[in-house]
Picture: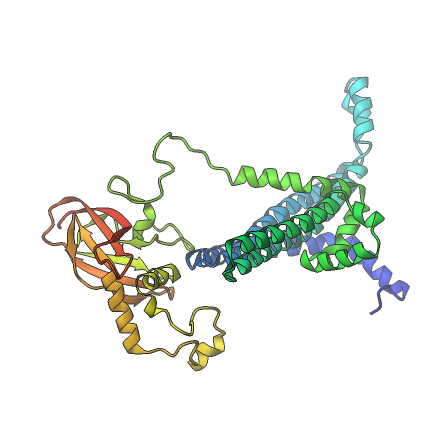
Length: 438
């Protein structure tokens, strides 16, 4: 197929589809809303997993996809409401025809104003048709614009991290960081100005700007949605909507992301202490899928069993603490990173070969680093490694608490920071709980 339609039949088909497109729009909107609602939980869980594993760049990308789904749902619901109003208006027109303003017996001034403002019922229906179609097209335009913005933000973080990984001198690192920051700032400022002003730079751009335009088209994903955007710009209502698009969504994000605090105290405390118990330190307080425990957790605030199960989340930051304690444990070939499923399928080795003796020694070091106490009494039971249903790994310890008195107790986990001084301890987690024997 060439760039231009070659026969009138193709144009007739497009015109026919245009007239009947509202049916397709409603079908697609219905399926899309249902499907997107179903994917919100898995996407949030995916986003949380990146957060827990401290994959910050992928976390922002995961948030972009999650946020784009929410925007799409909101836009499609608005589209369905507008289409429903349009269908209702068409139905009313088939029954009662046009609006007869003179029969309403309004005052001459009000009647004159309504005739000037509404004009006719057919024009009202035509406006609803225009608004509905533009809202449907705008939905997918916003998705790609949002994804493009977050991809560029992640790209910026990648370059900033790349500068830090070079381990250069402080002066050179600062210079390179400001250089990267300046390049990205100028680049995105030009893109934003051109978008808000509806292509002002394109009106006077030459060969140099053409190269810049082609490069940024790939960078911002506009190569995908560019024809749709330009079609909005040459439509009066679409032009007005694009102009207010950024302020509308910024205000919407601020409103819907805001929360009301009804108290002066305690609402901003998120870490457990002797006086405060945070919900993420208790397994039974994990609210929904995608939620995760803090650095450590116990089953509940109230314990009735004669033992206490202590869980420490085993992630990359914990391994870094162990490497800080004993640098000789750092593996020569890393096993971290993305592993293709084919490696798991065929049980191929990834990075440094697994050595059971080294794994056991590493666990012994973990038990040396971490100390666990309840009400200042140290419990020497060792941690073991447990893989849970969600394929996450945890350090598990079961403590006999049958001799404890009924009432409040404080679990404290500390870690040794250096092998040279075994007495130097740093706070890791504090979890209060209440023990009552059955």
